[in-house]
Every structure is written in structure tokens, then in C-alpha cells.
Length: 107
Image (tube, rainbow, N blue to C red; front, side, top):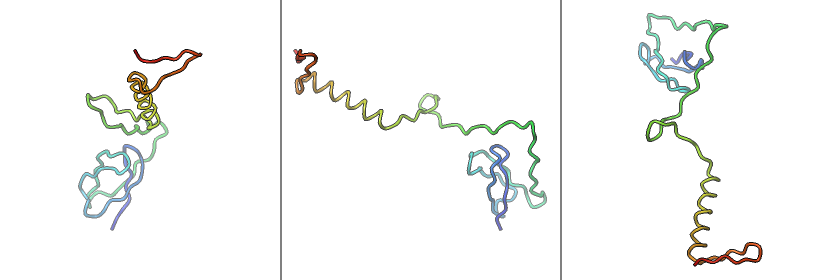
């Protein structure tokens, strides 16, 4: 029979199964380890304190050299590739550019 626990890290409730009594499970919200009380221990929830610290934000996975990874929107990737392709087309002579009555052509 499932029962409800509250994560001490993010303070969000989640359910655990009877087969998980006395074990350590990961919180589905913040992925922090939470010990499920055994059959001898009643599942008590601590009173929230007025002076309690706010829950810590979950961290993003580290990148290649330990730096946090950045999520760059797709529109910036597309714009960067369009600039690169345009520069290659102009330099290779496939496209000529006219700026203020002056035609710029590759050498």
C-alpha cells in the first residue's frame, strides 16, 4: 500500500511503496536521496519553521570541464549558420553584394 512522504530537501510530497520501507530512494522532484522510515519508525513530517531556509534550486548537470551547461535557443543556432553560409557564398563568388551603389565582389 503506497504512503506519502515529504522530501526534506525540496519539501514536495511523493509516494513510496511498502517494499521501500527502511531504504533510501531518490525524490522524483529534486533527485536527492530520501530515507524511507522503516516499519518501526512512524512517518512524521517536521513542522515547517518560520525561519526555515528556502529550498535549494536543483542544479543543472555539469558540462565538459565542470562548467554548467547553457541552453542556447534554436533560433540563435539557425542565425549563426545563416551568417556562416552567407559569408562563404560571398567569399566564394556565388553571391555579389551591392552596398550604396558599390558592388562588392571577391578578388
